[in-house]
Length: 320
Image 1: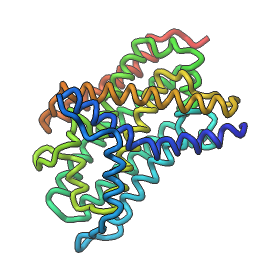
Image 2 (image 1 turned 90 degrees about the vertical axis):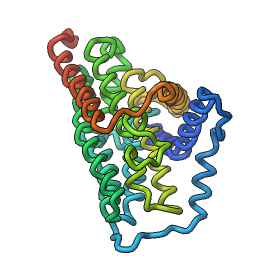
Image 3 (image 1 turned 135 degrees about the vertical axis):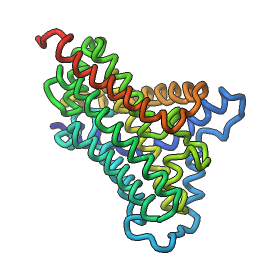
Image 4 (image 1 turned 90 degrees about the horizontal axis):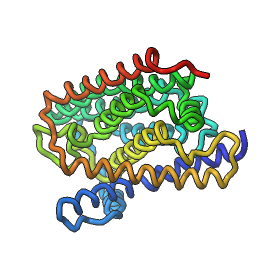
């Protein structure tokens, strides 16, 4: 491994950590413009975080260390994923740990931490949100495994860097029925994992509809800032992984130099910005589905992932 590997891992982690609020701000601004509003500006999430960091952090009576530690666990798990997965380069020193199961496990770690924090408060809203989030996670995580496994069959490995590198060498593999089915399944997964429409509405506080917001109602001050920052990073990481799995142009290879890593950073920033804009545009024309319909939507995405795996085995031509 060259020096570009560690440098690339540090650089892509820094870009995710510092640029995630900008992605959220861009998506909010796109929605505002399409809805005929001026919008708060792209930098508003940074101002919100600065304001929260300056406020007092209140801890509900009766909570334990679970409530206090959840924000740090969510942010730490997401930062590890950002350092390990192939965003700007496939040469990260953590590539060995960027296995599909490990990444899904880290995603689930953040989800479980937030669910336990919601239950730890002992409030009805916290329990309600935790129950809903658990139901969603139980359907989403297997879909991630199936959809990416469909891509890993042709690559011969479940390591995400190997899958991205193989797609970069043979882009025709994703232009297939298996690739199309896996892409559709992962789009639904990203929407569900990040609490976007039509699964959840990140801009609402209505008791009957909220999922993510119900678990963080008791947080305030710096802890709430860390949770909001972690959610923004989670959105950035998942969009970056989605675009690189199916459109890996610009990703630096394992033997590339620093210049290739810089170009890879620029490429992933551009791709994530386009993906975020497309997601925000779609939300303008979507309404939140009824809660009891969400499992049906996620079960449909699971079926797409299953069909993607089947197509990879039976419809794809043998690897040459």
